[in-house]
Length: 222
Image 1 (tube, rainbow, N blue to C red):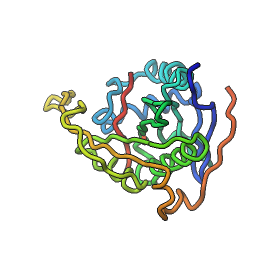
Image 2 (tube, helix red, strand yellow):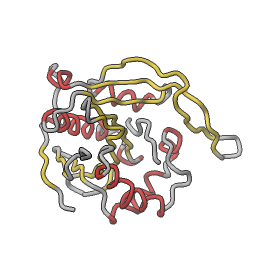
Image 3 (cartoon, rainbow, N blue to C red):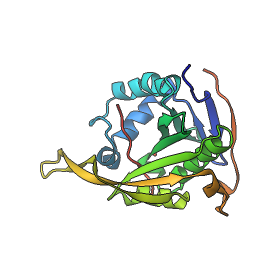
Image 4 (tube, rainbow, N blue to C red):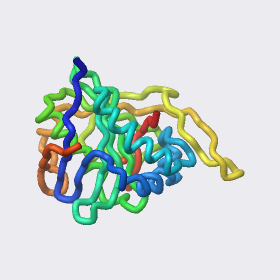
């Protein structure tokens, strides 16, 4: 029997992390066409409404039901506006380890949303799901994603040389692929108990849910 994460939402003082809904599709398509997200992720470019619908309504739910991980739409608590996504992936149920990737919408950067959502999910993952390791990989030149990892208390473990393909603009305003190194970070349960302040001045709540300056950790969009 395949192990899976529960179908839940997670709340912080400012954010609600929940499954994607059909109403998120336009905002997701707009967000994913941001140039920095295109540069650091493997998302289709251009990112169409059809791509957004396929991810939100088919691929994202399948990540959970297949046991590979879970995908959250990150929204503001007060406005319900989509501010990003957070994706647990490549989950190993034997070692109780998983990898996290996040994307933050252009308009929501600089607010600490990526770190807040990352910490909320980490606390849920370690305390409720009894996981032992959360891994994060950031492109070597993606300093914003690295700042999120550092602020969250992640520990840098080393470099995977030439392990990722990023994208950069050409003189003709197109895109070209470039190889880059990946920095590997980890967060363990004991790292959350080392005196770091909780996100947004408080903890988090989660409940049963019926049926990413910060922007993007490396995100594979298959």
